[in-house]
Structures are given as C-alpha cells and as structure tokens.
Length: 218
Image 1 (cartoon, rainbow, N blue to C red):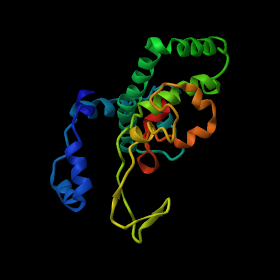
Image 2: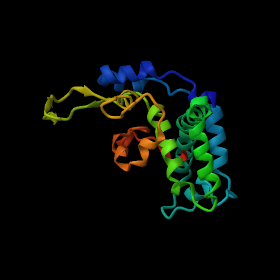
Image 3: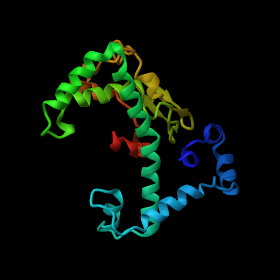
Image 4: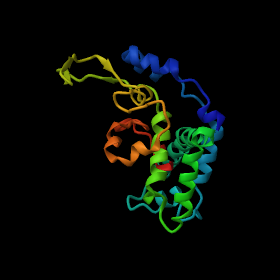
C-alpha cells in the first residue's frame, strides 16, 4: 500500500489552488502516477465470484443497477484507499488517547459500557460514540483546509461579503480547537458529545462532494 498512499500531493494541490487554469492544462499532458501493484490486486479481486455476502464486492456485484467491472474496480479502489489512510489514522489516534495514563478512567468507563451491553449494536452505545467523536475532533482524518472558489455574484457569510472568485477554506484541525466552539478544546473529554447539539460543529471527514468515504469504517 506504500505505492498507493505514500506520496506527496502538496505541490499538485498548491498548483490547483493558485493556478487552476494552468493545472488543468498540465493535467492533460502529465502521465498519471503509476500504481501497477495496486491496480493488479484490485482488478483480480473484483473478478472473484465467491465474495461473502458481508463484503463490498458482493454488494456491488449484486446491485440492481448491474454495474460494469470498471465501476466495481473503481469503487473497490476508492474504499481501499479510504480504509487505509483516513480510517486507519483515526483508529490509531483513538487508541493513543485511550492508552494515556490521564485517560485511564475514560478507558475503564468505555470498557464497562461495552462489556455490559454485549447484545447491543455498537451504534447504540452512547459513550463509545462519544469517545470516537472526541478522538475525531482532536485528530480529524481530513485536518487540512478544503479550498473552494466563491461562485459568481459573491456570497455573504455571517455579515461579511466575500467576492466571487476568491478562494476560501476552513481547517477542521483549527476549528475543532477553538475555545469559542469547544470549551477546554485541548482536553480529551468525550462527555461533551453526550449533548447531541455539539455534533453540528464537527467536520472530521470533510463535507459535501469531498466527504471521505472512509468515515463508514470508524
């Protein structure tokens, strides 16, 4: 998976941000970054006919839309990448927080909830959900700004006029650490999420068309 995910896209992203027209022209000329090992693995997997009913591949192969092999391969590749980077990072930071000595009480409370509710779905355990949300707040898998160009005519945001053509964005990492939004923002405090109103402030996996598919794995 080093081939698929261990690369720097900073230069490319900056080019698209500051010189979008030039970036489009260069994109037509540049050769796509080769990923032969990943492509071969995903394509061979997508051709399997005995995938279990619980798998993404089985769901795609039995979809009512009768999806073609190219669409199935693309979907599998997207979910593979999302599951490696964003979901894996989110779980690593969650385990890190729970392992800290100062969070031992949180770990014990979480363990009690899970052990005492073995018959319930994980989605129905409020403290488990709160712990996950708090970890995602402090360490959002998509922490950087997601730039957008203001559409024609401009927009008024919170009383401020933003002219058309301007590039705007907000970093989830920074927003989630604003004390004006979250009290004691640097503290790992899952109890804050037992109040569902706080969920409006989260932008952990991005939003809109760039929302990350990996959030389903957390």
